[in-house]
Image 1 (cartoon, rainbow, N blue to C red):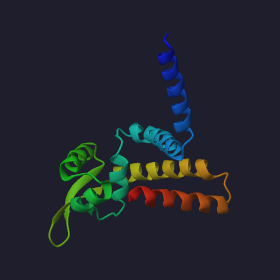
Image 2 (cartoon, rainbow, N blue to C red; image 1 turned 135 degrees about the vertical axis):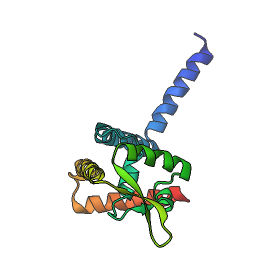
Image 3 (cartoon, helix red, strand yellow; image 1 turned 180 degrees about the vertical axis):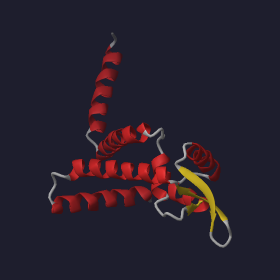
Length: 155
């Protein structure tokens, strides 16, 4: 093994150690692990990542216009349409028209509301597990810092 190769191994190791200590690395890692935990209840209902965002956006019993669903989920119309059709086939939602303009919309079925409630309960349970040991002041401080991170990263 050449000196150059050894130097590269040492450099790579220290760079990985340095990166692993950064806040952004830890935020990404925590986010990934939290998402993995949320996939279990999602997949148990035959859903895929991102379907939960649609179900949560449809919390209004009257439904939501597809235009608003695109905004709420950051999906374009074509991607949303594919997901909505799959969720209709699973009998989780139905497509309807709402408003004076009869805008294309979607709303949850009874089955969809039940699944959404299970997902919300799992979400809350995970959140409680993550921050349950923190006192109210620490929780407020954590939330304040996370909101600051979000604001900075949104610029």
